[in-house]
Length: 134
Length: 134
Image 1 (cartoon, chains in turn orange, green):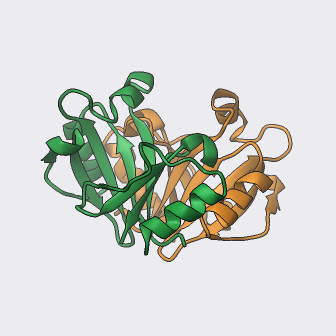
Image 2 (cartoon, one colour):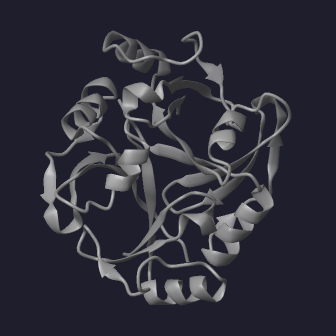
């Protein structure tokens, strides 16, 4: 069921400084910042040969990463996004095994324009998992 | 400089339960547990098409993940390991830009038998980064 790691999301308080650290210190290829107001974040993509890291900074009120940064003001790893072929099949299997899907259980359109769901971190040992239909 | 994501490491308090969650809830391929006493962890590999997740449980006294689990008793994302071609070149560039390498700055032999270094999370917005010479 679980496919590729689509991305690893890292919440940061200062996107410009974080992008510079990945570019200048680590020699990575980083994108220009992209504002995604409907998702409450501005994102920089760190392109790697086999996956990508997404550096996220809150944008606007009610950003979904604001509470995380309140708790972790320096930033930190926020979630891992895995690809699945069929998100409804994946959801039903997860619910059958007792795992909790966040929100109303219906896939939303994620930051890449594809259906996504988030799983409760308490069911996965403190890791927030996003599933994206590939 | 930054190559593939070699693995994402997740510290967990109960490796058997975590491996079962990834296998039974998420349908992932998980390895048998491997004890690595010289690294102070027992590890289960979650094999994904493009990278792997390593579920880590403390083993023995002075486990390097014991303090993390004291702070995050349910578990959580512990570090990201990136591959580099030349770890000494990478280290020197990092130090030149003011980034801090943990320990004495000399690569150690990591859990995969290859030279590794860890970078100070404060220099990377709360993310502990491992570099492994591929």
